[in-house]
Length: 245
Image 1 (spheres, rainbow, N blue to C red):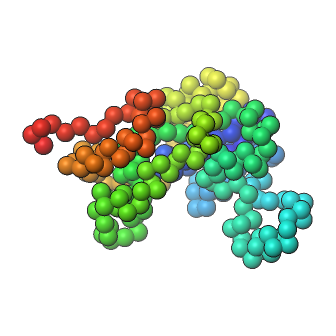
Image 2: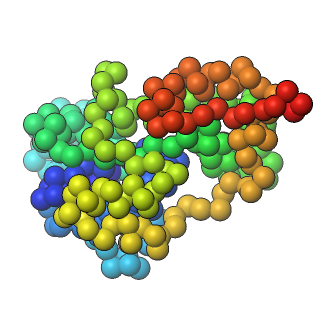
């Protein structure tokens, strides 16, 4: 997550949408009072580019002192709980911590991706440390149905869509350029983004939608059921198979 106070831009980062590359590029425009969530090892890319790194993402001491004693002890014992804004901060979390006023006024940006390609990317990322996946792709999705709508938390709160501007994964640079036109405070974003590639090379070249969804109309219908709203909005289509396949 990145919150640029002066530009009044809030970026909510979904999973497997080139969000890390986009967040690194956007951090170029951050000031000392802005919020930048940590990116772990990818912070090295930010530092090498001379961009601002993680900042203002932890609970302050004043906030900790206002917490219940049990919660204060948890913060001391569990370091990860000190993080107020993790890199994948949901829309609801951002609203709760920023406050409804700041959240509602902010120009909220996120990235969307073809839901079929998202699932494939998620599958290979999940199995990236294994020599061979334990489950094939269709069975992995069936055993992990939560992944079908995992990114909804970044776009919706209680079923209401909160994003003001979507960048399509498939048109990352073009849509980033459109965002610049709407928010001139971040002019140069698309040029910066074009030179950044984080977390690439995990998905094999042969892992196409047609190959992995072939012969499984039930799985295709499940994806369409959960993602029909965005499929219609962004004109995404299901994998197509001829009667001879």
